[in-house]
Image (tube, rainbow, N blue to C red; front, side, top):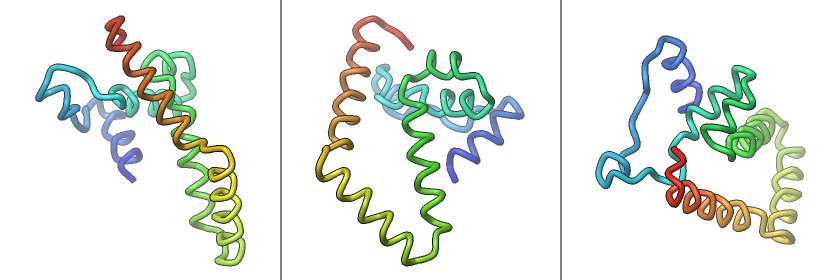
Amino acid sequence: MVVIFHFVLSQFGVLAWRCPLKMATGYPCPGCGLGTAIIELLKGHVQRSVQYHVFAPIFVAGFLVMSVMVILPAPQRIKAVKAIYDFEKKTGIVVVILMFLVIYWFVRLAFNIF
């Protein structure tokens, strides 16, 4: 819902919000640029999206999976949740993605890529 709100506001040239961490400390958070990157991806500008934040496609894919699961009938939704849970338990994919997000953040901070 927040992404849709941000997307609509951006169509009118209005920035929906600023990063509170960056406003307080001067340093961007790991998610800085992600909203803009997602909007660019939804507009079909993949290269521009990745320039703002490399993780945008991963977050969009996750959002799409969750959106589909919401509209599934209960029995199929339960099976899907179990399958995703089992996959995450076997692979630890959430922890891996979060680790890469933090590493990506440190690289961006070190080379001032924002």
